[in-house]
Length: 287
Ligand code: GLU
Image (cartoon, rainbow, N blue to C red; front, side, top):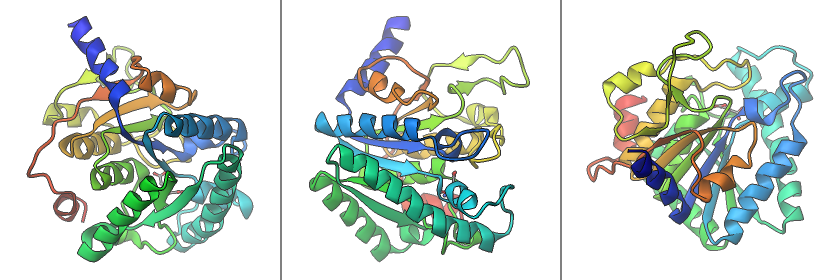
């Protein structure tokens, strides 16, 4: 059993198209809410090194609202949609400026892709987004994706970037999605509340019992995706044919360890369903 599971982790060495998602709570210092530059630099180096190994790389980065909130001196997480959107407008530009600067140190070109649910539901917009990703990857750029928070009203929101990253993985036919989170992976129960909660290494199939394990909490006041969102992301990614890993983003060097085939976090195995169609899934389940 152990050997079989180890082999599953080893398969990650052969992944060719990788989506990495990092959340706001992993990008910012907990106490001040300011960007953690040390971590950002390490993240960028990891991603550039994946590119240097000839892999296609996409980064889904949150942080727009958190960075914007700091820029205008808001102490609390805003509730009002228009304030969040204003924060996102300010923060997204600042975040991209920071990414551009650090990626440029490795002479790595990046591009910004902002999406809404409409991008996925509208046939023309979805095809355009798909073509743009293809072209960006063809020219060796790393697309940096976020939800277009400034224009997406409540009904049109993906809600959190865990699900957005799985949707992107599905859209571009990625074979691996890595969710960098503030937790180590999947437990049978919330480990902060239940000392008997057990860690789950490899998940072959996402069934209802597993979905029940997801608790809609995140443990931080910065990000928005709890375990339930991660399990939905896992469902989308695996049905689309990608493996998905939830790993702790406190040390982003976990990325190259995973690509070296080392066990880290929880691995959800791809379970491709030829009839799974991402736009229909969004329309039926997220609309
Ligand atoms: N799109 C939001 C932002 O960039 C974050 C959503 C999330 O953290 O899941 O601030």
